[in-house]
Image (cartoon, helix red, strand yellow):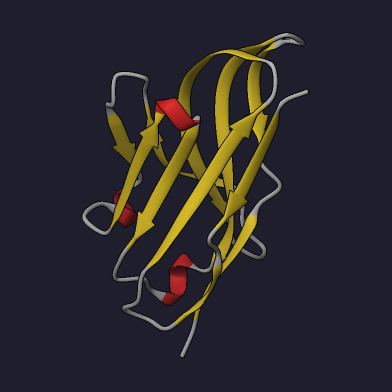
Length: 119
């Protein structure tokens, strides 16, 4: 079984920083594109950032210049460094990975971690 375990969420003041981590474990053969999504109350889940195995990154316009996605392939972990946080960044953040495992090849999701930006 494959698990994606997120950590690092919490409450932070506007202008502050947080670093999210997502560790993958289980019978994994290959990990392809990894990413972070978020869902604010009453809104649809949206893509925040993605990173390919080669390190190419993509960001939604609203976080460009403030968020940085990275991955440690040796640790099967993806990170999201979030700086200059704004109240509109408040959401549940979900880790996503496209990978091949013993069971299936496809998209896997973490359970989500709450990020609240408020004074």
